[in-house]
Structures are given as structure tokens and as C-alpha cells.
Length: 296
Image (cartoon, rainbow, N blue to C red; front, side, top):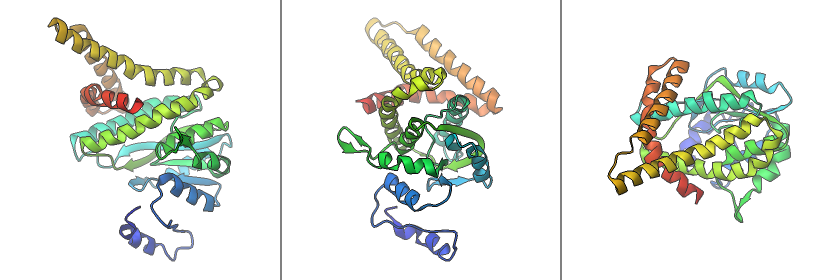
């Protein structure tokens, strides 16, 4: 952290605990270099990465360790929830977004042995695998510059490239603080979108060696927003140029939204997921333009 003074009491409380070693780097060098410093000085068989704004349940370590007993597994992540989900309408939406990302996307990917991004708030790695990959991880460049974003996705891609499986453990629960205002949320999504585009390109050559479902998954994640953007632009153009309301486009988007939210509500057994339909206008009018900007 840039504000070392704020965490000094935490360091002091563990100063005499022989199980704990606090590493203070000379300056704030970013997440990637901090991770690498800790990994290089570690000695256990497994390394657990937990973001500073995250609290993990008491049984998370044991549940992730059970998954890591298979030597073919290089990394495993837990399920993310928003610890501040009741703070605002936005944090409630993000909490549902996390549930869908974990229990639809990651759950499907783990069925085929390759979670494409083990998220930073709660991810366990095999140390022997990390040591093989650290040099590549540390020296990643993008367009001639050292990379300073997308650590979680890139490290996962390197694990898959090295031949390890990556897994999702749905009952290993980690609660993380999410943005409670729109602008910080959009900044976060911009970083994630840039990482997704860059590492999707890097990971394309892995797809032939993985289950065919994962090729479908990657295509869907990238073509789905594109088709939604084209439909939305066409609808706006129709309204502006012909003065006719694009009913079919609007009804199709509403129908698909309600089907998705209803299925999520049934699976999660929580009616609040019907409210995730509010995410659709945010997606169309804010996230899609932001993703186009990220791609540029």
C-alpha cells in the first residue's frame, strides 16, 4: 500500500507470531511485484492469494486445499460475494453479477477443467507451478511496455499454458468490497475489459488443446456483446432515421433479459435476481461503449 502507516498496527499485532512474516517493499510497486516478492520468499506447497479488501470464510483454506490435492490442478478459486451488497442499488447488482460470473461462467468452465480467470480476491496456486512461471509473469510486456494490469487473468493463462488445470470451488466463500458508485465501477470494468481483450488474444492458441466447450465460451463472451451493440445501434438508428419504434429489438432484449434473470432466481432460490434486469440498460448504454473504448 502507498499508505503504510494505516496498516502498521496490523503488522505490529503479528510481529511476534512465528507463523507470520510481513514483507515491506521499499515503495508501492503494484500488485504484481508484491505478489512475486511474497511467492519467492514462500516455502509452502500451496500459496493463497487474498486481496486486501477481502474476508474469507473460516473453511476456505481447507476446501481449496482439497481441490489442490490433485497434482494436475495448478490453481483453484473460491466463490466471490460482495461484503457491502446492502450499501446501495449498485452494490446489490454487482453482488448478483459476481454470483452469475461464478456460478454460471466459472462453474461451467471448471466442468471442462479450465477456469479462464482465477480471481484475485481468493485464489490458491501450486507453488511449484508458480516458480516455473514467475519469470514470464514478471516480464510481461504489452505493446512494448511492462504490463501493469490484468494480473489474475494472465497468471491463469500461464497456468493453462503450462498444462495445469484450473478449478472453481463454489462453497469456498470470499466476501470482497465492491464499488458503491458508478464511476469507480466503470473504471474497474475498463481495467477488466482491457485485460480480457489482451489475454483472450494470448489464450487463443490454447483453445485447440482444451475442451471444445471453452472455444464456444470464449466466442460467446466476445461475440455476445458485439451482437448486442450492433442490435442497439441499429435500433437507435431506426428510431432516429425513420421515426418508427424498434419494437422487435426492444422486446427481444427484454425477453432474453427476463429469461436469464428468472433462471438465475430459480437456481439461486432468491427472487432478488429478477432485479438484475436493471443491469441491462447499464450494460447497453455504459458498459458496451466502455468496452469499445477499452478495445481501442
